[in-house]
Length: 120
Image 1 (cartoon, rainbow, N blue to C red):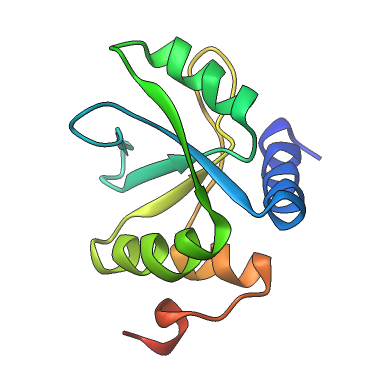
Image 2: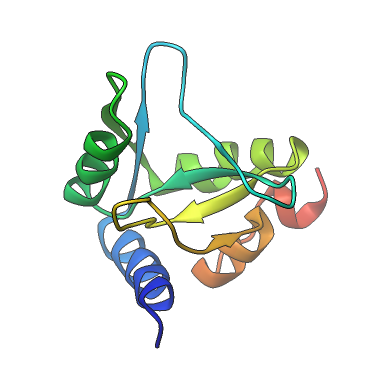
């Protein structure tokens, strides 16, 4: 399995077990990443230490925050789907790289159904 693949597997395993999703943010919100193909990713991490490493790499006064898994699934992922964002999963390394999933794919991997699945 690739490094990104193992990070993605760890993400889904960790958030199922801990029921928490981690992000980095500042007073203006969370950073997103624009890929070469024009897709914008909204990154999340499965543990506090992973998110702290990302905040340190990105710098710019970012802090770590968390949210319950249910909030992420029921509110954040449907909003991301409406905005055309994909979800970065446990990005790692000195350049914070890794896999991204559509909100629907993320929910499917968690075995969840939400407004994203219902097309709302």
